[in-house]
Length: 207
Image (cartoon, rainbow, N blue to C red):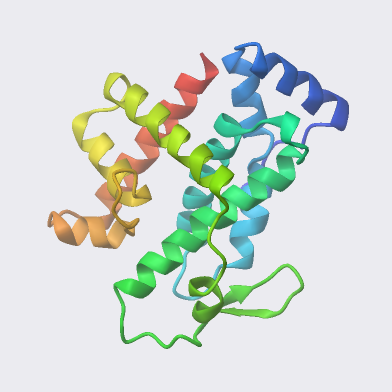
């Protein structure tokens, strides 16, 4: 697995959060970069023969970006706790979408393990509780922020791939393979477009 930067200390994190709240976009980017290890840790839990770690990390990074963009320390939760929730929610949406498009897959097929090491099945994901109202509002605000900035950062094709992959226009998230089949292009090309788009968004976050 790729080696990620060392997590911030408690004091460093508090300082960068303070700077981010004052509008420092570089501080926001550092918070994202220094929490990538958390994404890899969570994504690895759900890796299987059917799920590449690279794709799960890509999905998880998008969840982390959402978390940092919408984080509010005044609500009492730690950044790591809130980020983990957003990352796992992004992965759950991916699994829900995959289940809808693969009706022949058993509800009891193993897709990974939970935090306690117990086997996680599709039925566990599908029947999980819906996010609370505050979380839904935060997600909506984040989506609106992304839709506002993407036209000035990404090409139309990159915007389309990001919208389809992460369900930013109300539809269910799609896998890279599903996007490639929809437009008869290779999955590797979709992957390249997605990586370029995410890199552009990270550069934007640096300010």
